[in-house]
Length: 136
Image (cartoon, rainbow, N blue to C red; front, top):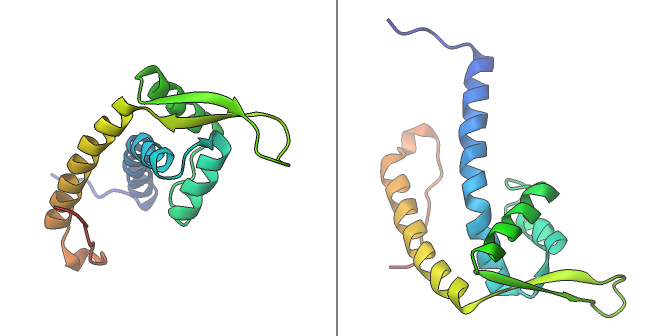
């Protein structure tokens, strides 16, 4: 027998599923942004992610720096200290390594395939807008 879920419980489940999805997306988004716009510092990444996603993704400072630390530990990015003219104290900037370029290229192919799968199983009747996936 199915139990009818309360609205609050449904909202809680939806929130967790979306939060888990966003967490997995941060590393991919950051690596692509560093590749496209780097060298860039952590705060700059936070601002760009929030702006590009129109507020849908709003990583905490801790999330940004933990993700950057993991990407650097994996050898996908490297960091250096630098200052922008007239911009205050030195900041840690990040750039993508050759390994990072190779990895993100393959990951992006996987992301496109995954988006196509999601698009094929999410029905228009559920109120979603059409998704346009570029590439391939």
